[in-house]
Amino acid sequence: MTIDPSLAELRTELPASLFLADTAAEAAWAREDDSVLTEQERNYAREFDAEAATTWSAGRVVLRHVLGAHLDRDPAGIDIRLDSAGKPRHDDCEFSVSRSRRLVIVAVADDPVGLDIEAVPEPAVAAEALQLVHPRERAELDQLSGPEMAAEFARLWARKEAFLRAMSTGLARDPGMDYVGSGPLPESPHPDVDIFDLESGIPEGHFAAIAFNR
Image (cartoon, rainbow, N blue to C red):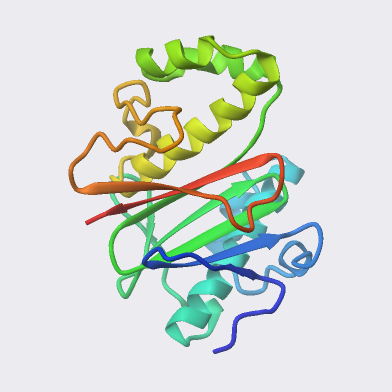
């Protein structure tokens, strides 16, 4: 099955297929047509306010189309289940999906994978969220000025969520427990997990990261 051309493939040397969709531009169809969703997914989306519901639904529509192309199956017929930690799964591949406002990013891989994309927050929001990270990370970011600190916080948080998703815990695990660092390269706190920043194709004002659990 051919992937929709509005889903931009991000070319990397990493062992994953990566796709980015802008659901307020080329991939606006993902907001307008939810016919591939299950009734359960539609009901879940209705628990949010209107904008959040549309954003979540568009992300799930994009995910279903990416999995449909990867598995060569009808996107509407793909069985997406939740594991005990609430992470969406499919029996025939590993995947991860993340949303940030209008953007949706999806990774499909052979090994358990975690993915996150973050928009740079306002400095005041980032400063308040510093209490959630590891003490060493907080000390690193405290040395930076407001806008720079906010940008580096977004990069750090993308790394941290990618790591936690690859571990299949998500934010059920305290994000302040593990040090991934805010330096030029992420540092993995687990010997079986590799973390990488994603740069090529990521829109300005956003940071993204991916992690693999070998």
